[in-house]
Amino acid sequence: MIKNLYQLLEHAQQTFPGRTALHFKDNSLSYSELYQQVNAVALNLRQHGVKRFDRVAVYLPKQFETISSIWGTAACGGVFVPVNPALKPEQVQHILQDCNVRLLVTSKDRLATLTAILNDCPDLHTILLTDDECAEQLPAHLAVNALLPAASEAEADSLGMLCGAVTDSDMAAILYTSGSTGKPKGVVLSQRNMLVGASSVASYLHNTADDVILALLPLSFDYGLSQLTTAFTVGASVVLLDFFLVQDVVRTVARHKVTGIAAVPPLWAQLAKAKWHDDSAASVRYLTNSGGAMPQPLLKQLQGIFSNAEPYLMYGLTEAFRSTYLPPADLARKPGSMGKAIPNAEIVVVREDGSLCGPNEPGELVHRGPLVSLGYWNAPEKTAERFKFDPMIPSGIQLQSPAVWSGDTVKADEEGYLYFVGRRDEMIKTSGYRVSPTEVEEAIYRLEPALVDVAAMGIYDGVDQAILVVVATSGSDPDVKSWQAQLKRSLPNFMQPREIIVLNSLPKNANGKIDRKTLATQYQDYFLAVKSV
Image (cartoon, rainbow, N blue to C red; front, side, top):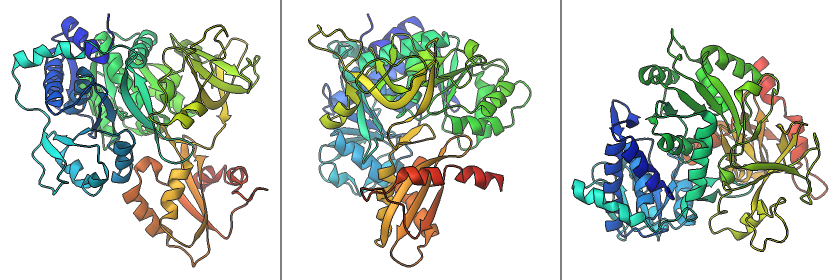
């Protein structure tokens, strides 16, 4: 019985030892080679004091060492925390502090950007680098060493016993996702969450060992991380790619004969504009979309490019991994639908009191079952807001597992197919990320003392939500271009405002707060109007 992520890889290398597990640039690793590298990393982590449940952060782009660090952490019973490589030092600092990271895996160049924040991370005691030793002046309490020291094959193969006590109910990872207010929250995923999720996705995508899956999305994103767990479940290959030019994706798909691609709407829009020559997309048998609704015109474009591929439109929550999918056979007869629950999950639509809604009655989407995560790290109040009673559980059960109340309003038709209606909070969903308006607003307030009011909103641009910020200032005309340049240094790309508008004042409601609904209505067509000019 496979009960943790390390055993998942161990089973894959026993079953498919010579098959390619990972491709990266011009190199590849078989399942056997990856397993040995993971064991070497795990031994190194143990030697540096990583114990069961210790948090290990991985701040790297997609490369072999990223994967071996994640699975090496799992091998020694630790909890891996993948940090989005697009994040700036301030956001990295929050993650390192929030979940008391003990060890950080990164590279020399990335470490150089973090030196100013390391003194404020007292729990961090060791940094392991993927490349040469760092020449930076670091705090005295930090030890810096190499990630992959020389280890004999015998030492690496002896590791299996170390994770024997790790059960499928233990925590495996902490993934950070933005909340409606303030800093991102750490979603705690169990071993079971990840194993069941991988098995579920592999079943409805019909994955096999012959698949070659393209990993375009960040591994800090549950949707991106699942490309690995799904592949390892069936012995498929994963192509690791961080691209700068969209034509790099085209060349990679053709070169590796990619069979599966996962992306979010803005990325799909980029891929639709690429030059797909001859049969460069012929190998692709399925496409998946999550992180936002797929516009119908964009879907038709993709169907023209990937003529042999079946599109799977999905909806997911970091708090519950994945929730629904629309089978390709239902695309034509259920346009705009989120589909039904994925295997081994149940999705219900409920009223505020937890009673079930009738057909076509809007209510809150509630996800129940083994994919529901373990809540937010060290945040009982925020956990209680989202992880609440399971409306389907009989009252006689004394220790009830919670369900995730998504905050999304949906409705189900007579056949049970779900349709998105809107969000109950003010979260901005852009580029597959949930962005807190408060976090963007706080960054802008820090730019100018004369600012009176700031409101960040997500405004539809034809493909995705783009961030529009409106401000009111008591001073002279602000230098918006200078603001935007400063924001590029303090916020990751997906949190950058598309535009900042300066007004004399912002509308207020009866309580004296910014009337965000009025602003959203006033600017709902702003980016569409700009496009048409």
